[in-house]
Image 1 (cartoon, one colour):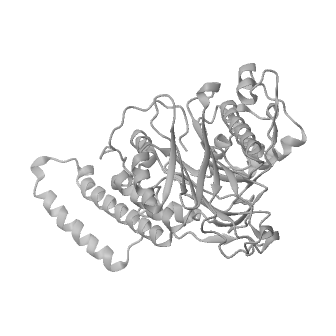
Image 2: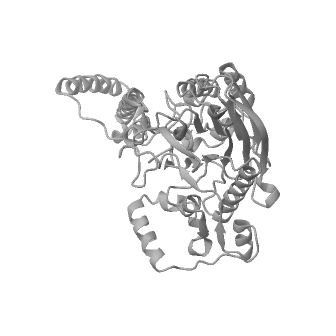
Image 3: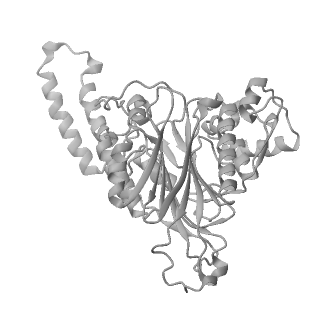
Amino acid sequence: MRGGDRRLPPSVHYPATAGRKRKPSAIPKQCHDHVKRQRLVVKEETVTLIANEADELPTSNRFSSIQCSQRQEKKRKKLKRRQKSATTEAHRRWVFSTRDLSGYKDKVVVVSYNILGVENASNHPDLYSKVPTKLLDWNRRRKLINKEINQYNPSILCFQEVDRFNDLNNLLKKGGFKGVYKARTGEAYDGCAMFWKDDLFTLLHQENIEFQNFGLRHNVAQLCVLKMNRNQSNSDVDTKASQIPPTRSLIVGNIHVLFNPNRGDIKLGQMRLFLEKAHKLSQEWGCIPVVLAGDLNSMPQSALYQFLASSELDVRLHDRRKISGQVEHQSQHRAYRYQNEDASRSRPLVHRWSNEELRLATGSDGVTHLQHCLKLCSAYYGIPGSCRTRDNYGEPLATSYHSKFMGTVDYIWHTEELVPVRVLETLPVDILRKTGGLPSEKWGSDHLALVCELAFADDGSSS
């Protein structure tokens, strides 16, 4: 989620004292026998305190240290029970398209995952105040992440907040992956990384976007052209010329958008440029399908989300500080907010943007209307899910959770030449809350991986 232009210091290890004390929580009622035992303990300790009357402790403080330690121990045990319960219940399940896609042979499994940069975790301990220090250790987290993604049998991996690329590369190449990395510009140390199964794909072209070259901060994005290998797929297809399957290629984009909620102009500018580059590449390589993944630091149904979904946006109808929906989300009044947004569309309100803000957002002076040429669909929106994990619009309720945020900022988008076969549901919000915050015993990042299987839309007609 942290895609901002913060200046981070040189690499350091996560401090052992980074956590903060937890806020007191309600003490559960104890059974009768336990209360009796507790009274006996207090009585014994009271005698000990009376024996040290020479210390002249204030009357009001005589029992404070005992009661405090007892409360802390109870809270610690309660949190541990909740976290253990959350770990036991933290199972993610696949949900499938309602369409019959059994005849589609060419499929790819795409993962988008913000894996929490080591330096970001070190420099923002306030976000992980309820997470035990050992759970933030990178050596532990990278093993969890590797174990997790192997369970999904992925074809393509898009990672954000990568500042230990060599560690990831060494782990993933054992599973047959090849990868490329693009570090952010400026003084930050994380970046984006993309991997693909070497036996499934060949890299035909790669290019990176450094947004600083366009006055759009130090974030970066990746675009790769991948061709599907035919050496082992569709081996049972008739060898007649009319039956030879088409060569499959696709564009895969990976991005981590600026975090700063107030700079909607820069967020829009980064996304606009990303979409323009992806469309241009698609045209150059024969109008091939596009998959875009990443941490967009924007909420579902926000103006930026609507720009992706509808292909256009009049920036004057939106407050620059509310483009991503992050500010409104913090108020926790989502239903009320959306009703107001719907009402405002019926009576448009023109917001004031400076010439510089408009130029950053639209790429041109005097332009106020944004458009892009990709017809995009959200993979999760395309497959209905549970009300425990999805919002009213079909997007996940939460893809990220730490001490100061729970919500959705991660997405996988695809063009109409691809259809979603299945997606991996996120965790229900009640289960997430039991963890006290991510990372946890089971999950190696403060984000949840988004996983979808996509098929080529024209494949079903040949089955």
